[in-house]
Length: 283
Image (tube, rainbow, N blue to C red):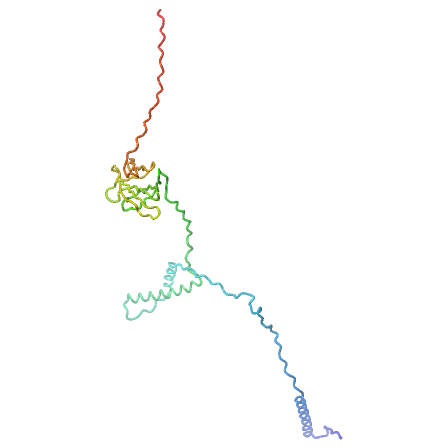
């Protein structure tokens, strides 16, 4: 086959020949690529770790902010701050068609509302808190009523008699016999001129039901009040405001005289016998 010298060809036919060769090569390459079997597309492999039951549980607890306790507002300080803010606010536009007094009241109300809202917003920066309460010292336990044994009963230093409307009590004497409480309230007459009196009543120790009384007994002398100071058995000794002593026998409900004091008989030693003087001899 005779080779063709491209340089011997004219300019235009030579360009056509070179272009045809390039087109033929491109078509051949396209045919070869189309006839090659197509490989299946590779499935991308996920590098992410599949969640497991353990992995689904959070390692760290959720960052939930703790609730901030609502501060206690000091009401007087809050109002004082509102009034101070009101002085810095411009006067609101007055309402039309109202008397001057009502207009001024409406303006002050609007200013107060606006100032209060301003102070509420300010509290997020500087809260107006109530002062801490002053510590209260612990209370001293109540020691109870003063009592002491007297005779067959007990003297109770209290003015809270069972029936204060009948007597102004100063103290009380009581005894328990056969599940019955006999109480004597000593004091003064409840109404009228002052006069020493005692009130006697008997009531059940379990049910507190009154069995007998109340019975009033007036002191046997003109005194303002009487008070139980002692007892011998069931004979109660009372002292008046004047210092006089009275004795009341509980079983017989009678004023009695004090028992006579035992007479003291002093034992006198016999006088010594005087011996006569000796007789002197006469000169």
